[in-house]
Structures are given as structure tokens and as C-alpha cells.
Image (cartoon, rainbow, N blue to C red; front, side, top):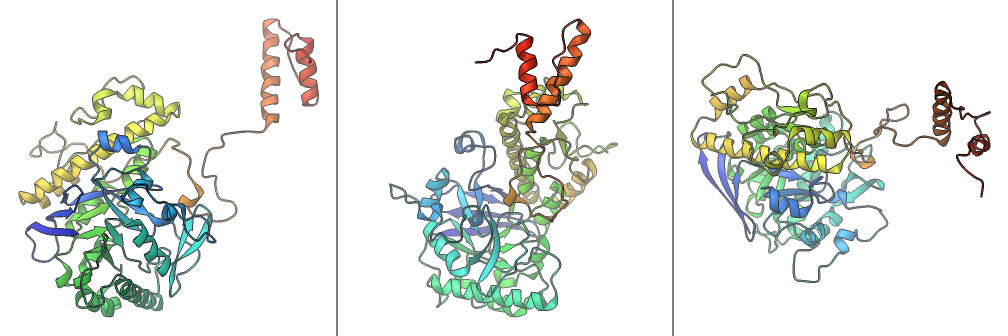
Length: 477
């Protein structure tokens, strides 16, 4: 059973607020806070034991489309999985510790736009096996089997171009009908909370109130007693929340590009935020260096002559990081900063060692956790708006430009634009003929030192072997 209490709210309508979110057998979450996004149920680059030992991650977002593979399968492996003990199957399948809260939704954050359109009973998704349709009935059955702590109700949200008037009307009607049917399946026809382990969060569509007035009216009256929270896809959607639903917790499934956007979302009233920014910056070899509201070395009362970067790019070969024995941040107490220095992480990145992204991920999660802790302190002391201005004066408005090549991008993480597009990943392997040509060139260069060059006549493999045999390098079997 989920409970949420607003502990501090200076604004009578929408604005930054403090809350206390509790779920039985899970860690207590002070809001505003962030929800770590996962890939196939796992925080990227960090194993479950490291999450437990060296991070303070209190909640994770799991996307169902990460686990769906082939449309002809009756049940995906994660749904067919059954633990040997009387435990939650989803938590056992992804190896998550017991006190971390699990939020389950239909799509990844951010969702990859699909070429197909929603129907009256399904939304399009992209899986490792291609595009598919996720039926409402199948999604609700999966939620009943997986039993996450928080289940995101299915909504018809168009992630492509700006939708037209008719498309908006269909989206609102479908979302209304899907929420009504979902509550009926959960035994909420009379407005009671369902007898289930999952708390249901209903979606507020990213449209004006007038464009979804029928849905918003029923959400405030008929559906309100049966839902436990709200989901908004953009911070501006919070303005359409009806007054009777404002005491509910708000989950913002959003992809803020910078910490400044995170502060804007909290100013709009978001309680929980998904942050793919942490994963993308770790992939890019970037380490967070920002603190709220200002750096410890520069008091908030002093003016800032030069704006500081939000992160440092450890891929850069022109910087001093290759020889620096300093930690990423002297004020950070995370595992990475207390045990390793910049030169080591820079070396790991250039050597393409997986440990590099693990260390960066641990630091970035620690930095964002400290960021939210400072935000809650600022709201509690009623200095949040002033601190936001100080933060804007102290730090640059954009994250550093990516200069390095991170881990390989998987096909289901991005949408293809058609013929002629650039490669997603750097070419890792070449043709054997290219290697033979390199051997030929290397052999010719040795002639300058008085040695016989090893070349190729016509570039064939046989001629290479003959030359090597003549020079005594190899012998035929």
C-alpha cells in the first residue's frame, strides 16, 4: 500500500513542495527525488551488488518493452519466470534489492518514436525484435504478474510530431477508456482501491485542459478514489492537474537535458523525476561537477566572473586529466572520488575498459543524489527560488559537447531514419585485405633498415605466405 503526505508546500496551487512517500517493505523516499532509469531492468554499467553497496538509489523505472521480444510468444521470459521462494518475480528476475521501489511503465524513457500509430486497444512499441503493438489487455496482465510497486497506466501519447486536433481528441478518448477498463479489471468499479500490490498512477496528457476536459473531469471525480498518483510527460502538464488530484504524488517521466531543466520541473510541482541524463552523461565519459546552489569553494554571496561547467569530459586528450591525481570532486564522498583519480579514469576510457563507465556511473548517481538533497533543504528553508537564480548564475546553461565514443548503441535504442544515415557505432572490425595491405606497407618500410621487404604481388594471401616462407618467418605444414 502506497501513502504520500505533503510535508511542506508554500504555494497554494503548483510549485516546489516536500513530500513523504512510503510503500510497505520499501525504503522511505523524501520528495522531490529522482527515479533511476534502467536498461532491461538494470541500472547501466552498475551491477545489483554495487547498487546496494555504493549508491543511494531508492527507486528505479523499468520499461516493459525492454523485455518483450517476439510477438508470437505467449509470455515473455520475465513474465513466465517464477521464483522458487514466495517473492516478487520482477524483483527476483532483475536481481534488485528488496528495499528499492520499482516503477513499471510500458515504454522506455525517453521513448523511441515508432512509425506505427496507436489503435483503440494498443500502443506501438519497439523491442529488440522490431516494432510491435502492445495490447491493453496484455499490458495489464503483465502488471498483474510482475507486481511492481507502482504501475503506470497505459496512455495514448504521440511521441512523433506535434499532433493535430483530431489526433488529440482520439488520444484523450483512448486514455480515458483505457484507464476506465484498467480500473474495472482491478476491481475498482465502485471507486475503491484495488486489492493488489501495485499502486496505479494515471497519466495526465501533455495537452491543454480544454483539449482533454472530459478525461480531466472524470479523473478528478470518478477515477480519483481508485488511483494512487499521477504521471506527467512534461513539466507544463502539471498545470492541467485538477485541484482534487493535487495532493497525489506526481511522477514526471521526462528527459531533462540539464540540471536547470530539473529545477524547472521541480518548480512546476514534480515530486519524482526520471533522469536518463545520468546514464547518457556516463556513457559520454562526463562526470558531474555541479552542486546546489553554488560550488563549496565559492560562497553564494560572491559574484561569479566566469560560469562553471556542469560536468567535465574525461575523454578529452588535450586536457590535464591524463596526468591529474586529483579526484573528480574534492567535496564528493562517493566510491569513485575516494578511491580513484582523474588520470586513472581517463586511461580507462581511452582503453575502452568497462570499469570506466562503472566508476562514472557511481559518481554521477552520488552527485545527483546530493543535488536533490540540497534541493529539499532549500525548499524547507523557503529559499528555493533564490537558490535557483544563484545556480543559474554559477553554471553554464548546457552540458559539455560529447567528444568521445561511448558504449555501443543498440538498435532498439534509436530509430532509423532510412538510407544514407551515419553509422551508430564506430567500425570495430575491417576486412582481411586491409590487414594484408598494412603488412605489405610495414614490410616495405623495413627495407630502409637493410632488411628485405615483405610485400604482396597482387594482394593475394598465397603470395604473402610465399614471401614469409622465403624469409624464414613461417614454414608450410
